[in-house]
Image 1 (tube, one colour):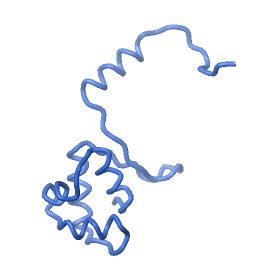
Image 2 (cartoon, one colour):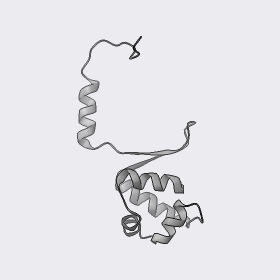
Image 3 (spheres, helix red, strand yellow):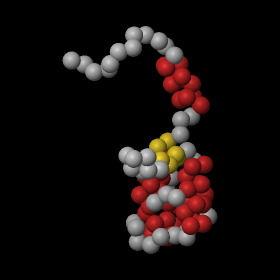
Length: 99
């Protein structure tokens, strides 16, 4: 499950207001505000609804992988195609560091 900081960061990444997230998740704006401010925790069902709404809008939550938790954006199909093209360009394999 996500925490308040991840919720706030995901909203910023996908450009969602609290109002828009509240409508998408079916959770009150006040619950979101309290959750993001670390004042009180919403119910597990509310957190799950918030997470599902944010993921549907393009957020990807990163669980603790030894480097901490976080959030990032999903790649669009267009982005994924461009990355695949760049990865398949070939060329000399060498370190990227400049002396």
